[in-house]
Image 1: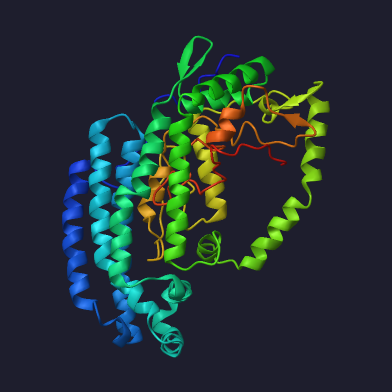
Image 2: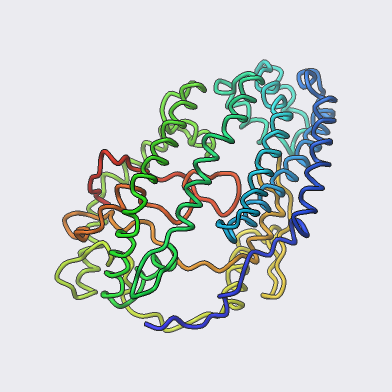
Length: 422
């Protein structure tokens, strides 16, 4: 099937909303480090004695610092993702990460001092109108009280993350970014290969699935080691922070209690039959004798509309405008900027959102090529390498600091490959 020309082939991240160039980024980081040092000198050891008005003023300053940190990190990350094989871009990303981490260490005292306050003092402060804009942020931070370590310990964890979790995450991204998969005489990157799983032609889908799996075999040991190391790192951090179970940190961050999550899991796992019913119906609609993993994303009928880049971009921005008209300009394709502010609880600035309004076009990615109800959809004989490394390989599943990232999802150990009911 011939790929239509959408005009998106040369679309790349437009990062001028963040910084004009890398030199401007480095100049701002130098200024930011000085401002963070001044903030720490003014407020370290004093958070507990601040009144509501003074605390609100401190939060204003902290929020501005965090927004600038998010802006710097977003620029370096997106600049690097445009070409993960470029050593210069990789060096800039690493340098920015180290600088941002160093600055964050100078600001960590705020959280440790806040959670050290007595509940009565916290309740009294949050009752004042001066802190209305920050009440939710302060409440959610205080809920982490039992899991926040001392300032010195928090600094050590932050420092070690650069050569630990963050380093492994970057290695994962670069490994998959450089990987190529042989399909029909072409050497394709991951996302172009996975996009073939949405092709109406079953032969194309099957060959793409086999090519992807065959290509992953070359990286099986490496990617498995990365995932197992990241899992061990999380387990270690959870123990140090005294979390009761592996989901507690995520549930706190999502502001949802464990019981609600357990209820959701039970509701989903208790009705796997609904998914099996869906796949039985899809098998009938596709008119095939047996449904394989590469049939999961097969269109029931071929799309009769094609959108060029400008039209698609305008459509997406319009949809975001409906969700939050004060955050997104409902503008034509020629202009899109994000507005609004980001509270200190966010680690990415509002400016970073504007970059996503003019982002590089990406082909669709698949979630998994092996997860299905065994009763109605079984993996092809050569697809198991995918399950043994990572069901989600479109981007780093452990990167949580800057777009475009995704939350963690079911990494598997190489020692245990099993089928899943979905």
